[in-house]
Image (cartoon, rainbow, N blue to C red; front, side, top):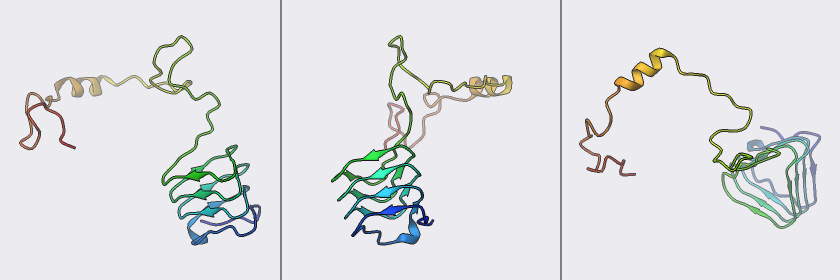
Length: 133
């Protein structure tokens, strides 16, 4: 996982494990710190004095302003219209433009004949049928 030649790094940028990051076509401002297993894609920008924690994904087009902390495992998306509801106000259950393949007859039969947890409770499951974790 490299730091590409087309990355612009400001002064005093800290990347303690440069072999464990993937940066290409991006810019990182002065004094920022980049953790391990971070990917910053082309046309993304991290401001000055930021801390980007490990396992973070910053995709194309994301701009992080100065003095921002990005916690462990954060994943940015470049969805131009992120939302929780459809245009009519109903709950969005899958991203726009995604189509779900209809289940095959065999899959429907398998689901219909599968025993439910209420019919055969596990010895370790609580009586409510809910998983304890």
